[in-house]
Amino acid sequence: MRKLITRFFPLLPAAVVILSLVFSHSCANTTQAPRGGQKDTIPPVIVKISPKPGSTNIPQKGAQITFTFDEYVVVKNPKNIYLSPPQVKSPKYKIKGKSVVVYFEEDLLPDLTYTLDLTGAIADNNEGNMFPGYTTFFSTGETVDSMFITGTVVDCSNLKPIKGATVMLYKDQRDSAVFLQRPVASAKTDDWGYFSIRNIKDTVYRAYAMVDASANNVYDPEEDRIAFLDTLVTPRRVVNDTLPELMKFEMKDTLSCLSRKSDITLNVFREKPEKQMLMNKKRTADRAAYITFMSTDTRIDSLWFKNFPPEKVITEFNIPKDSLLLWLNDSRRMPDTLHLFVKYWKTDSLNTLVPVTEDFKLVDENRPKGKKKPAVTHNDTICKLKLTAIPEKFEQDGIILEFEDPPFLGYFDSLSFKSINPKQIEKKEKFSIERDTLNLRRYVITPKVDIQEGYEYVFKVPHRVFKDINGHWNDSTQVKVTKPKDDELSTFTLTLSGVKNKYIIHLLNEKKSQVMREYIVDTNRSLVFPYLKKGAYCIRVIEDVNRNGIVDTGSLLQHRQPEKVRFLKTKDKDTFDIPERSEIEQSLDLEEFMSD
Image 1 (cartoon, rainbow, N blue to C red):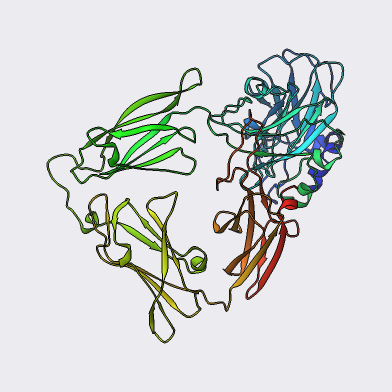
Image 2 (tube, rainbow, N blue to C red; image 1 turned 30 degrees about the vertical axis):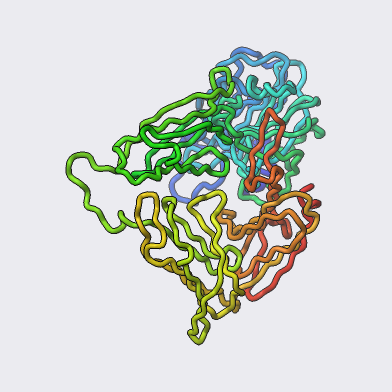
């Protein structure tokens, strides 16, 4: 029933008006739900709109649109009463009997076609059944514009649809328009990230989508996320309320929602802040702290602590270079407050990068106040380290050795790696150890032996092998790992061709929330994903244009889109199923795949 109501909605007002006249003497005028009987599950229906859709010469001052329903309603989400083109102030409303009267605090503009959308705004008064929505249109001039554009808005990193994004069209093709002006036409996306901007002029537009944090319809790079189309867009189709693209469907009606065609797709990203300044600082331990910056690629000329030689400071930037970890490699007792000086390039009032020196006080908040000394536990006096070996990734990633604080002394020859075969015969095995180039506290241990099923592998760090900057020695620790049994597990092999650039390949879980395997490739090769349990998986391909190993965002003013992300699709899905005990092979031409 609900599908029929929403699918043939344009025919309902006239029909309901006739029926209401026939049965008006027998209907009760009440806001109370009738007692007994089945629960009302049918959403409210519009029986009259005044002025009628398509009306012209609507007055610029004091205009109001009245929607009369077949039952008493409430406005559940006032922000979803949306006027296009938008005004500085959102539309207002008042309830009058079974009618919702929408009015405007600002004057309308002359000779302009407006649309007013109610999707997601209204529910019935008794059961809270949401009204599917309706878009009416009117003009302050002699004619009504009749073209429309549709599309989809997605997140650039995972291609998931974005609900509630504002899609905006501008006739002004200057880059500054989206910062300074409101659009000439706009619409909100639904649960599927889908939008239709209707009753617009047949002309050329520049298209944007924005996740508008302040709901002011003007782009603020520090708060909002943005998307833009590389090319200009012109509407190709004329408004017709029988088209699926202009109907209001239930969002759970998957088949109907997927039947709508998209003219354009907009990939939303968050821009790298243009302004640079030091944002946060914190002392995390006796000899450790961190500082963060507003923008990436921070340029620091020098950094030092008061009363400590500069060479005693150990620093570690993250990959985007907007966060810096700090340690003091000094054995003397640390003061309650450290004075940090940072000389870096900061954005001034003229938006120019200039060198400045700022100093900060870093207080050890963990140090108890007063004369009473805290009890010292064994955990406070050891060099903290962690060994990690994941059976499914052991052959690919080896063993990870990571320290909480940088070690400054280590006897690597004392580390041991051995295998234990099914007969419990032990054998000393060779391995290599290499420090991570991006993390000075992380080491990768790679076995120099073929990993065999049924064998146990043990890597051991003996007592007093490493000494950290706090002067603490490590406790003995070890990790044991066994190659997973192949009985129930499967292998997926992805053979790549057409590799003309550098790519990051991720194997994700079904929800795309966890990276289970990662490869970075720049040549044709086969990628093997072993030891997979039965289930659904995703393959994400990221085109690493600048070859820095991370997914870079876009820039509106530089007309640079975020680095391209694609998901391997099978049968119109971006997930694929792995059965038990199987070996699955898939070929992929990256040049063709990424050009879609």
